[in-house]
Image 1: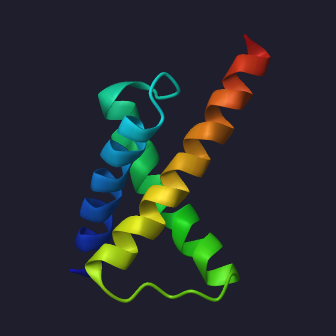
Image 2 (image 1 turned 30 degrees about the vertical axis):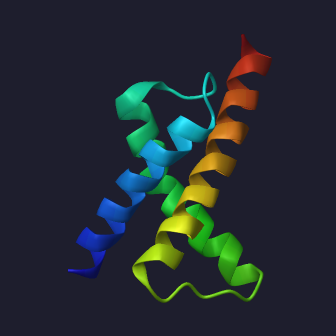
Length: 82
């Protein structure tokens, strides 16, 4: 059940990251996928910093930060190739 919650939080984070990074996203579906992956990145980054989000809001914030970081990295990588 925890995996389902993480995926749902990641999808919400992808939506929020897409709204925060207008013009850097990969479309609606792409942002949701990046958000799900960003939840992993955000959890890793916040874990390195010593923060452990325990509630829903904390997990959503860390997932959104991770999704925004991932969107910036992916958009920079795709612009270099193009």
